[in-house]
Length: 228
Image (cartoon, rainbow, N blue to C red; front, side, top):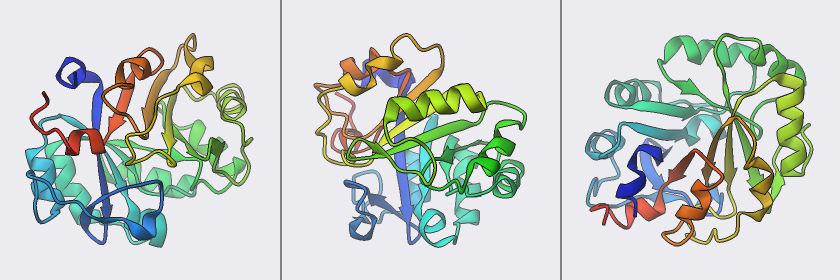
C-alpha cells in the first residue's frame, strides 16, 4: 500500500531536545524519543540518512516551543534530503531569515504566525509559501483566523493568495485513527497544492489521496519500514 504511493508520501521527522520524537495528539510535553530499527538512539542524522524517501517534513519543536532552533542539525539534514520545515515562523523577518539560511520550503503555520500584518508581508515574497492550517479538535489554531477549517482556508486563499496548503490534524497525530475526511470535501475541486498530516492508517490512505496531493505520515511508517 505505502509503496504504491511512495512519490506522494512525505515522512515526518519531529525533533525535540535534539532527538527524533514520536508525536501523539499534539501533547508535546509527553513526546518521547522515537526508537525504531532505523535509529535506536533517536539520532536525527542517522534517522534521516536511513529514510528511504527523498522528501521529508521536519518540525523543529525546540524552535516552535522555545525559540531555540537546531540550526546545525537542520543544515546537516538538508544536505541529505529535500525538506518541508516548520520552525515556528512568527514574523516576516523570521521567514526571510530562514528562507535565506536554508534551501528548503519554510512553512508558515497558523499556530505560530503572529498576525495578519506579518502574514501579508510573507504572502508578497517570491515563490509560493506553504501555509499550514493547524487543527485541534477540528478547529483552527490561530490568533486571528476563523476557527472553521473551510472558512480559514478560503480566507487565506482569497485575501492573501496562498496556493499551497498543509492541514495538520494535531488531535489525530500518532494515533492511526483518521477515518473520515468529510470535513475536507470542500477541497476536492480546489486547484491548489494540498498536503495533509495526522492519523493516517492503512485503511484511510486511499480516501485521503482522493482529496490531497501529498500525505505526511509518521506512525504508519514507523511501524512498517519494509513498506509492505
